[in-house]
Amino acid sequence: MAASNTYSAKPLVVSINNDSNNNANKTTNVDDDFDCIRVEISDLDNNCSNSTTLSLMRCKTQILHPFRNLLCLIGWRPFGADSLRRSSIFIRIINIIYPILILLLLLFNYTYEIIICQGRLNVKTDTQTTTTTTTTTTSILTTSSIKNQSEGTWATLHTGITLPHTTNANMTLIHNHNECGHIFTTYILPDILHFVAFIIGFIHFRVTEGEAMYSLMEKVFIYADENVRLSGTNRVIRRLKLFLLIGCIWVIISVATHALSNAMNDFAHTFIFRETTYHIVKETPVRYVLFAIDIICLLISNCIHMAVAMNYVCHCEMILFYCKAIRIRLEEKSIHLLEAMKRILDLGTSISQLNSAASRMMSILIIFFLERTILGFILLVVNRIFQVNMWIYRSLYTVIWFSILAFCLGQAARVTSKCDKFYRISLSMRVYGYHNSTSTELDGFLLFLSKAELRVKLFGLTIRPGKIIFIGITFLLIFIILFQTSILSSTNFFL
Image (cartoon, rainbow, N blue to C red; front, side, top):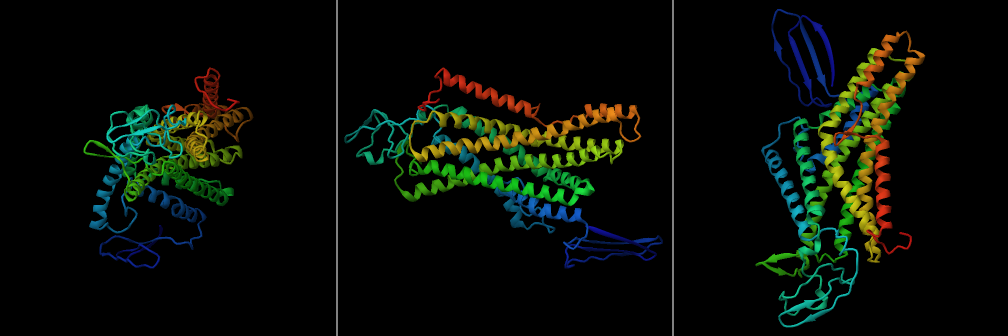
């Protein structure tokens, strides 16, 4: 907004223009005995000469608006919240119904994936191929082994289930819950973590409306170094746009991977219970309708992952840019120590905001991502179903969850690593001096940095590059030991 003030002895005149076309004008005249002020308020357009203002407008258009649309999609932000006009009754009703619909879709997704053993994540039964022999009678079907490689089935039939006229063509029939195995650790526990992250995000964004990110963005662009302001802000915008693009690609690939898992079973793993009896879904329209609902639920679920991750990594990226702007001015000795301490204190406030609700959501989903990554890696290594589509599915599943895990942890570690450079700069200043600052002032600056708490935390623990490398090496050694002791076995000669 731009404001111009002109002093006169006339009554107060306030003119408010809400858009560039001056469609809404309001004038108020008040007579009094005091000097009055004329205030004109109007929205800026792209003709503004201030590069910082233009960068903020461009960032809001290209970054914040798509992110807020994502929040609206998953129900974390009401529709029409950015409108200058009051929402209609229809929009307000939608804002009440839509979050409830999202909640019901999530609950359906949690239940549905347990019923169908989504993803074929059983290490014992879903990594091997066996043959199928059937004996059909008028009333009793008996099978001894239940893996039909040609039909892509992975269900089990037991003696005593009455299914007349069952043939070998529809062996992808009945799903036995015992065949899933480890239901709590594979499905229920990750679903609980996902749901808790959803509730935290819903409360956080409904209350704050994401203002913390925009305020940090304003500080970053305003305090950018004068020499690199234009190029630096453009670099930040390009990087944030790249993050959003990567997030969209991640969601698309994750949904496509799930669709591949369904296609390998010819969409025949959808099971409906009627009158407490197993029922075979033969109708193609019913199967595809349930498949479409499953895809929609998975899309919403993965968009929640994307929203939490994008909020976290974009926040980290802007902190990194802000940190770099302060650090450059300290290295150039172009900022006073008192002003530097104010900026660093403000930086610490932004990191504290990152370590609050955003960190809690991210910490919960980090456990989710780590569990999926480890499970996917084990399934990939011990897989003995030698089919191209199965190898593609197992590989994509592992890469998808590992990529988002490494991306989020990497951003957190970068922030801590870059903030640690302030302490090294202060040591150099203490040795070589800084302008006309006394040794007492330099000692105070050094003590200030030691107490500033410029560290990013997940699970309440500081995230550093060394810790992540140590944990990665530890997991690698554990897997090597498991292979050496044949606890994990693979058909690969080299493993």
